Length: 169
Image (cartoon, rainbow, N blue to C red; front, side, top):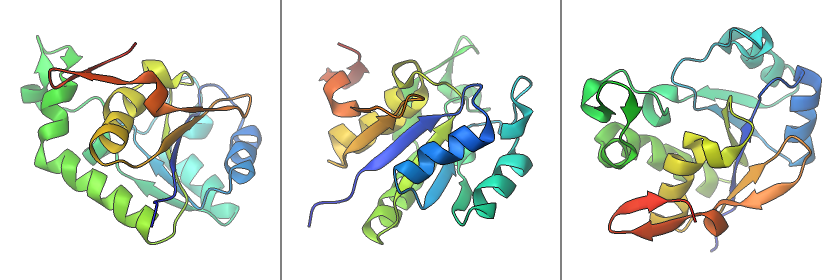
């Protein structure tokens, strides 16, 4: 049985109504918040409490997983010079792998999942560089990025594996 795809989406500065429409248009059941810190200074409508209320208010589920699959870990073992996240080390961590297993279990149980972060351009976001690369290249789970104009791009078409490091084309 071929698994259903996992979607990703960046809220950027969208309004909540437009964001929820993108999710509904793609038949999403579960929004997985992958932000390490689920708060926004610029788009407070996407603070954890507010977006959870909005998502559940339209009948979807909200799950916070930024502590497992977030791109800005607080643990300095995963930071180069305490600034840049070392995705290869983070991807190998037990916490991250457990988070990926939860995503896969959800898809295998029939849920349509969208991983949410703040960055609209998925190719500049950890949801592509870290999470989608793990799902696509190592787990053979298709990942599609939903853009703010409701177009979708396949993550696999923008990833290449070289010497255990993932890079963009």
